[in-house]
Structure formats: structure tokens, C-alpha cells
Length: 220
Image (cartoon, rainbow, N blue to C red; front, side):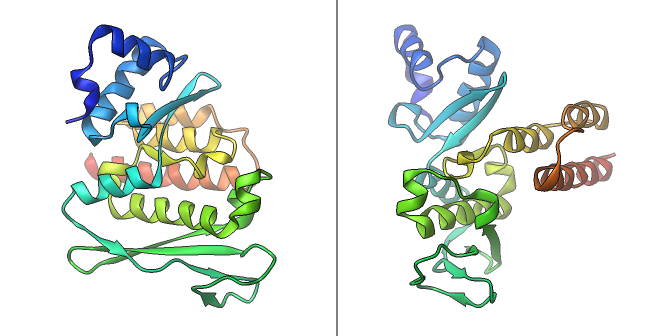
């Protein structure tokens, strides 16, 4: 059970002013429900809410995502992260002074299934001190979080690791909102809000749209 469920009114008010600052009452209730569902403790910064452009995103650290994966009983760890340059050749240790082109992480499930995800530098890297100091660590965090979400979509689909959110949040908000749609009409309404997005962001939103659409069609 999340620590959120045991808080007094004054403690919840403090939480709203810190970890869940600026959320509407409805957004705060949704955040509280996700804390309860995931078992992550917002008071320990295992999970928190970020709001931009009126939309809320749920963020947690990589340890929080691992904790959620572990709670499924199906998580059996992961392989060592690997990196590649323009040649596409993967290596466990990146020694080049330039950052890698991509990082790949493979998560192992109880039945032996290996679920991999690749994070591209061009899509996620930011001009921040952390990314400059630890480029491989940050990129592998993104790859791991995506691999965990692919392996355990029911539990992790609406939660993002902080390294992913270094990028402008709109794309992740769009994908998260689409993943939470329960009907085609609802999905179409969300998609309309992002029809003017261009470039790689448009491709990612479009891919998420078609994935959710297929899932909804299967349910009909």
C-alpha cells in the first residue's frame, strides 16, 4: 500500500504544495490513485506529478520503475546495457569521447522472454549538465524505462522516468493520454489536439495512436 493512503489532511495538503504542486483537484485525485496502484511513495520522491500546458505527467525514478516491475512477480532483471556508434556495432563499454548514437537495454521476464528497447541520442539528449557529464548513464536510463514499459505495459504505461522527460513533455503527455483512452471517440478527440505536431514527434504520436486504436478495435 502506498504511504499516501495513510496521510492526514494536513500532510496531504503539504504533499500538494510540494510533490504535487499546481495540480487541480481532479489531477491530484488521479495522482493519488496512481500512487496507491503502484505502491510508490511520493514523500520519498519515488513518484511525483509534473504539469505543463495544463496537462499532468506522472514521473518516477528508474528505481521506482524497477520496483513496480518487481511487484509483478514476472521481472527477472536485465542484461547489461549496450551502446553503439554510427556503425551500429553494440558494445557494453563506451570509451569514445563522443556520446553514443544509441543505447539498448533488454529486460528478462519470468518465462524467459527478452524485451528490448533502443533509445536514440538524437531523440532524447538535452543540453543539460547531467546529460553532458553522464551521457551513457542517462541514455541507458531512457532505454531501460522503455524496455520495462514494453515488458509490463499494464503496470507502467502511464509512468515515465525523469530522464525521458528532459525532452519537451508534450509528446509524452500525448502518448500517455492516448494510452488511457477507453473508446475510439475519446482517442480521436485526443489525437485532434496534436494534429499540428511535426517531425519525429509526430511519428511517435502517430505510432502511439495506431497502437491504441488497434487495441480498442480488438476489444470491440
